[in-house]
Image (cartoon, rainbow, N blue to C red; front, top):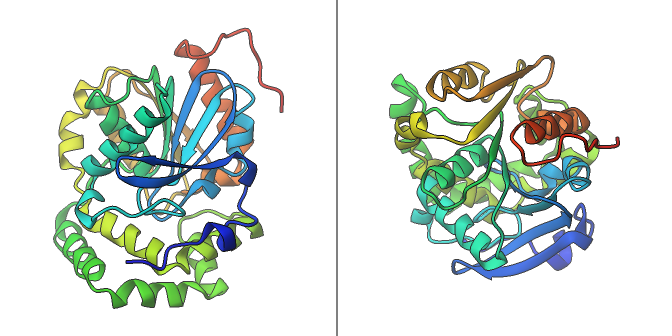
Length: 301
């Protein structure tokens, strides 16, 4: 589906526009933001989001890292591949193609929700070799029971019907509806953040990609492979997350012996947008422990 966001129109006031560039890689035209200097930090947002999700966290990390933050396949201002490629494996390979095109080797991989699963899949498959993975409310576990039997076929049906994304986008142009959607994650974000999400969910092309991603998503192989992950893993989980409950992080910690868990009280699924300085501090501390950053360096607030 077309109806993608237009950079010259929808991107005129995009956060950190000066850091944006467009790159051809893996058969797609990618929107990528690059800022800062130091060890390379690859950031991967969650389903239905875009680089705006890092608008406050990225500048803090850029004080210590070279931040590379793309809009994932089909999201935001990045082109949409054939729908079959919007799977965990397909998106991992496409993102690896972007890293190859940029000639970067991430020292740390930071993913939110589904982005954490993508980065972990890339690491397990040898597509990247970070010293540390940071999962922000990572979506690692598949739905079980009746949810698994119902949600995936429903997502497939919606994704393949061209009218559904337009209906979602039409409904998504209502600020009150988007506000309720975001509150439903357990998070409260600022008005600018809500305005940017409103722009995204008002785009039929963006909505279609998110639905196609959900339709293709299969986390069972990742769950099977997690015990062989040797990379340091920091699991940041928020107690008020209504999308990915902290129980997921506890389960992953059982499967990955070297994983460390930071439980944050009072925040929701978008914790990195609610309290970016707090999240940045946890990331820097973990990067120092993993040898990504020199311990004697301290990040100024």
